[in-house]
Length: 337
Image (cartoon, one colour):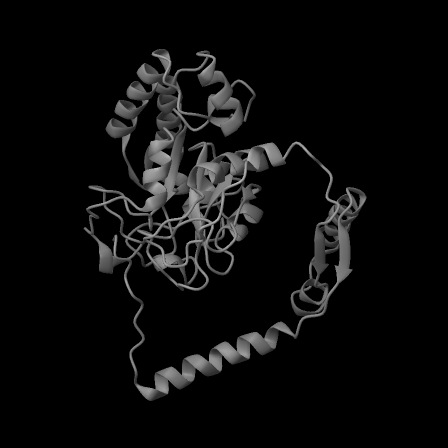
């Protein structure tokens, strides 16, 4: 990882160079494709690469920018999509044998918005089967590996998304989070992972797991990059019944201020002191982060949650009751899929 390697530029850095015509989208795509060719057989971040389409999109972006039609900070930026995001004419298979050969007729709303912003799709990224269940070796595609140590797991279910960004195989990647599937890979791969507020980003055209808990969001190198992506994908979508019809603020501009007065933070220490005890080093890092936030003006309060074991017992009891009843549980497929 060197400062001269374009594959490790942040989205904001690459966007600035592209806008100034100091970095070619074609050369950037070529650099990513070369790196993917070298590393993907080890990391298994991509399940499907789109080199011809990516290069064609890069040439188009370069021509538009040269002609003065620059669309914004994602124009010419190479990205990857977790393989639960529908892509028109390109297979979206959710990491499952049940969906092999499934080719959507239309893009997911987020896919469409990223393309409109000028982002260039390099390919589809590895996911746990249907975005749940854990790392498995009996799925159609090998599980993604952690680029910091390929013997280790990148977490999931947005496993390929985390691995791809951390390894410099795309500038940013879209994941999904139902119970931690953006936040875990971000933590295990050393990235910024954003789980947006429910209703802020459309899930239309994304394979569902739990309608009331699913979120779509980015994995990036920096918080600024996450703000850039959120700006492009946030907004009301009538195709997602849970989509919020609220104004979209300027997320990047909000990063200028470090004043957190008025922000309230709750700390549930029992979760990492009693239920899942953390290491000493992690605990120290956590306390340091809390003090930084407190120093910036945030109000910090201690809160108490019921033991995690109660949640697990309740979930297990519910599953056993459904299985004993013999009823089949189905999940509605999104109308745009």
